[in-house]
Image (tube, helix red, strand yellow):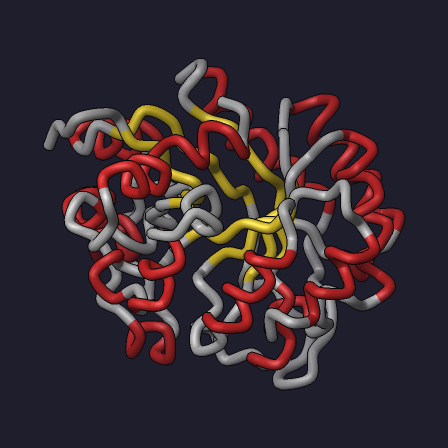
Length: 293
């Protein structure tokens, strides 16, 4: 599936280890209504499988998100995640293994629970200093607090201090969690308070893509990744913005593998309605600059 240049995946997960077919993962029924999960999502895959899929799609680099999404206290109004130190260390080791076995292909960002406050800061420092991580990630709907809550601010300050970008989910989440936690305009306060912080909105921000575009226009340090959305279904407003001089440097292609197959996202990525210079920025150059590959 070779094109004019190689692609950069601005957000991918790590595959869970392969499991017997009789133990295939049962996806949250609500998430399954949003999309058809990939085989790797339900059955698991090796790190080699992931790299092989990238090679087949001519994807040169990927920014990996190492996060645990399934541990949330309570139900509709649960706040915080209970990720024990042993599980946190195992997650860091698996991401480090990926970077070590395939040198130069990957950078990693760490999923954090900001309700741990300074505990989250120390986890970030540990992951950067001992495992080679180079970014942070938070999914507010799974945390149960919006990204302008005070508990997030120590993480933002540490990211500025260490020169790390941070990814933050925007838009209605697939899991049965509150969408209000991911209303994009909560980031307005964050971007005002931390002008040196590079913030990347992930998963598009639907149905508030116009608010996302307004933030992209307002803040030079805010970007958007079309992760978890097949490029075919990205709203036209996003492409219209990316085709402008103000938007050409702002939007990045991603798969969120294993959520979506690499092959499909690559194929549809080449077909998006962008001018040639804007398409190259979307598929490669913007991520190359933002994540400093």
